[in-house]
Length: 103
Image 1 (cartoon, helix red, strand yellow):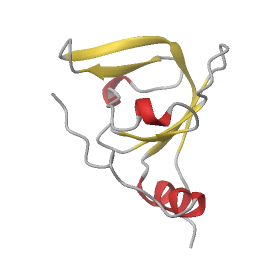
Image 2 (cartoon, rainbow, N blue to C red; image 1 turned 120 degrees about the vertical axis):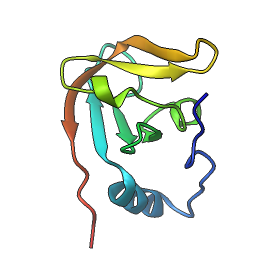
Image 3 (cartoon, rainbow, N blue to C red; image 1 turned 135 degrees about the vertical axis):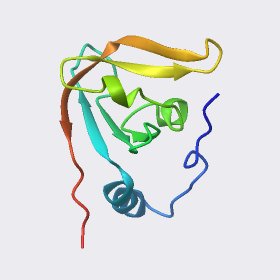
Image 4 (cartoon, rainbow, N blue to C red; image 1 turned 180 degrees about the vertical axis):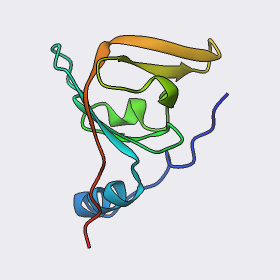
């Protein structure tokens, strides 16, 4: 089982969340659109999902397999029930960027 260190954080505003993501995220994952609602994920260097642009209440605190994270791959997300990473075929990595902290 993997334990989230950021899932329960709350922010006063969208600007506070945005500033925190830009300081804390290791990668911004941009997903190819296959009709799903979620297209952007912010991930910590531990693989923990910090936030996403849709379904954040579902995915925040889950873990991505950072060893397999690269453009052109599907996301592998940890499943506690199966005790392993599971391939999410509808979440295809189109590009990866590094956040730019605001001064």
